[in-house]
Amino acid sequence: MQTSFQPAALLRPQPAGSESASRNKPNARTGETDGVAALAHAPDNAPAVRLLTDTLREATRRNASDLHIEPAESGWRVRLRIDGVLHEIATPPAHLRDAFITRVKVLARMDIAERRVPQDGRLRLATSPGRTEDYRVNSLPTLFGEKLVLRRLDALPTDLSLDSLGLDAQQRDAVGCAIRAPHGLVLVTGPTGSGKTLSLYCFLNLLNSESRNLCSVEDPAEIQLAGINQVSVREKAGLTFAVALRAFLRQDPDIVMVGEIRDEETADVAVKAAQTGHLVLSTLHTNDAPAAAARLLDIGVAPYNLAAALRMVTAQRLVRRLCTACRTPAPHSAAALRSAGFAEEQIDGWQPYTAKGCAACHGIGYRGRVGVHQVMPMSDAMRDLIVARAGTHELARQARSEHIGTLRDAALARVRDGSPKHSPPPRSREQYRYTSPCVDRHALPMARCRSRRKP
Ligand SMILES: [Zn+2]
Image (cartoon, rainbow, N blue to C red; front, top):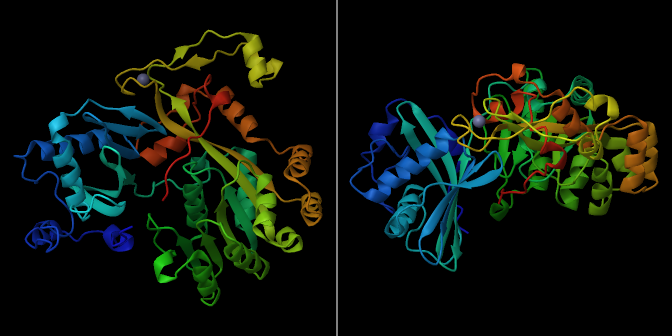
């Protein structure tokens, strides 16, 4: 794996005029220019270059999170991931495949001669005057040639409030209470791509003030947040989550964010930090909130330490919202809604909707996503269960008895309260994903969050 790119350096804002100045200094290895690759000014005589320009513009226009460039036995295809689902775009001319892939690799500063091992690269493009986009590029040698995946790296949304995450009023209060506590461990759980990192950024943003020292370690730190001391994991150089976390504790921290707890050493330091007067925020890959305790016990955390440190666990998913411009009333039966989990009184006089597709949503029928959450503050009874090494089911039963809704309950509530009058105009992708409560009323009870990415 080539890991020559410098995320933080490339994320730094480019000074005005640097684009034209840097274009005069070709990179010795690739022959490309340093700094921002100016898509709009690229020599547009080559069809492959024009095709790349058009493809990236289409990705921006449709708010895609990833681009997949996939060689096949004959020809190739380009797919865009929009709101968590892949969509193929117009079939590109077969003869442009190699030139297209080479062009991306050159711009991403990857070794174009090496096609046998996976490589990583980073791409910053001026897509239009005054607008740049960052991409993380990864190549994979497949049977029919190199497959490339370009991940669009977003800027942080301007709205980082708890409301913007899609929490209901009760959940918002519980989360606000937990993250404002002076110490303890707050965990956000969910599969990859469920918006955990954005939730943590939202928490950090709320806590970000002159009076506190906030440190975060991520793999890698993709979004910059002013006022936070951000560190990227570099395993090869020996900078792991645990090493960074130990260093943080010698840096007089108030709040520490750990991108992910995935080994015993990190879990151990995080739990001890939470017990010694620091607020620790982290994520964990579990299906729901009650499973988090069992996971940490499995990793090797001592039950009494975990019970003492853990303050709150949340679980979350992102689900697609129906396009409000074209959604249509769906034929439905009360029995089907009851079996989906709706109570009798919720069904009366309520009209569910289904996806249709229009120009506004590019024929998909969905536009943007919304977060659904399970918020589980730790009670004394739950701490006792953890000390007794109780299983996930017992913790879930206890949570139920304390009126903590499941993810499914949250999703059903979203389906039920969806209303077009709350829909704001689309802004950035992340913002749009979280702002409106109008969701796909039909697909939601069965909604699954896709599992994706993060190398
Ligand atoms: Zn539509």
